[in-house]
Image 1 (spheres, rainbow, N blue to C red):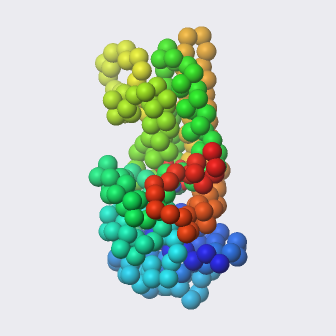
Image 2 (image 1 turned 30 degrees about the horizontal axis):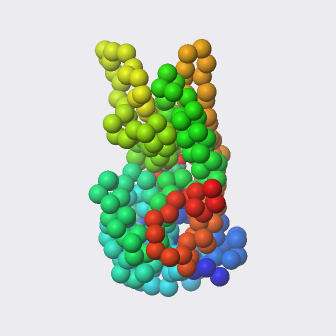
Image 3 (image 1 turned 135 degrees about the vertical axis):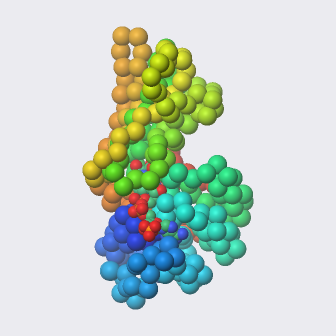
Length: 261
Ligand SMILES: NC(=O)C1=CN([C@@H]2O[C@H](COP(=O)(O)OP(=O)(O)OC[C@H]3O[C@@H](n4cnc5c(N)ncnc54)[C@H](OP(=O)(O)O)[C@@H]3O)[C@@H](O)[C@H]2O)C=CC1
Ligand SMILES: O=C(O)C1=N[C@H](C(=O)O)C[C@H](O)C1
């Protein structure tokens, strides 16, 4: 039985993971971390009656073998330091991380296993491979645009997945994403610069997560799309990844390592 702790346990992803873990039977939730002052604090976790939501990191992570972080980037560095101090493998599902946090995670990965996974679905991770291949095969006459759509409660934009897709496309063309990304267009923009990668964002309703990468060329357009119809898809992937991460040696990992491609 794998013992996990979920950080951001009262959130949408946290709840989905807690529910799914119960139905699976081979994963035990031993910690459910919430923000200090959260209305959930000290309440019993539904499905896990012997566990209470806590904001006490030491208590919440004490028995965990793997930590799953879906806490919307609020105290990432404190969490990473704790995992390093206690040798805990960490899955970071949270998106919208600062570049400085990413550096802290890279340092931490020298000491503990760290899996950075902005999207834990199988389909999106296959999409990353397809985008790499298409961006490399089609030259810069094929303009790359990335469109993402999510529910109206999402806090960060563009999504972590959209940015990861952009990185993959840029890397395939031997570019750095920050040198070619375009996030704003309004007014007299002038023509599109060849080689740019544009991002567009839709927010509304209960959209679980949709990503389309366009490669728009002369006389044709390739569109590669992934649509998640349920948040449980991400929760399933997170629990698979947690099982994979347990007992791994220190290192920086991605979902493609978990999925074996
Ligand atoms: N990797 C993947 O496949 C996926 C990643 N995500 C990402 O996961 C993150 C969470 O998404 P979602 O569940 O929809 O967001 P929510 O806002 O529903 O959940 C985030 C939760 O984290 C809590 N929280 C905030 N700070 C802390 C803290 N310091 N310690 C513990 N808990 C804390 C929040 O509490 P409060 O509300 O009280 O502030 C909230 O309950 C986002 O970054 C999202 O982009 C989402 C889906 C899939
Ligand atoms: O906040 C969400 O909901 C999601 N966030 C992730 C992201 O930012 O890429 C993954 C998924 O699309 C859902």
